[in-house]
Image (cartoon, rainbow, N blue to C red; front, side, top):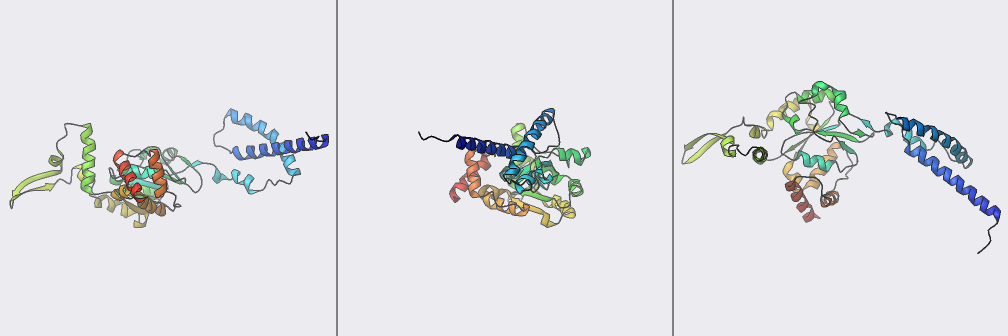
Length: 307
């Protein structure tokens, strides 16, 4: 074994200590971001950190390290602290058209954060105020989009006015599908909970008569599953408050048969970088993206064919 002079060993040890202190300085200044809420443990840790900082700063200065560099300063900017914000975009409807699938797809984007469940602020809890609503939102960084999904907003008469009061520039997402298919899906969900429910035909049709050799019936547009499929009525209310450019209609059918195409439209509308692609969706569906079995299987099969 070759002999190493003592001076060389001492020099190597000194460099090692300097490197360790520089690493410690970087970690402490990178990881410790100010929070709005402080705890006793935080202040205790901060006291010890200040001692390490004073020593590490001296060693770093000797080596010419600048504390005004981007790496240090950027973590102390206000926009780097996650903050709860009111939504920038809302999925306002329509029930049984694929709103959950849309939200789960959007969650794949790193710049989208959504409330964990339907908040129902604009139809049930508006009296609690915007601060209550803000508190239900997830923390986001500057540049990220805050979202919320409650399909019943679409048919709530006061919702357009209330949403406009929150933010006239909010972006609205509306998933629609064939009204008959939507009504059947709505009825099927109700029938699964109430086996005694009358047949779909008996509820959807009224005034059956026999004329011109056939049976003629009138659709009961007052029955909720049918009424929800008459999209023009709620649309008029929303267009009184918001320009057409602020509302994006998503095809529930195409969201299943070609999810990559619809998600590209959604990302463009929201001003997001194109991250959710055919490859991304296929990867996540292979991992078991939490969608309804029908939507998940259909989308998965489509992506496999297109891949």
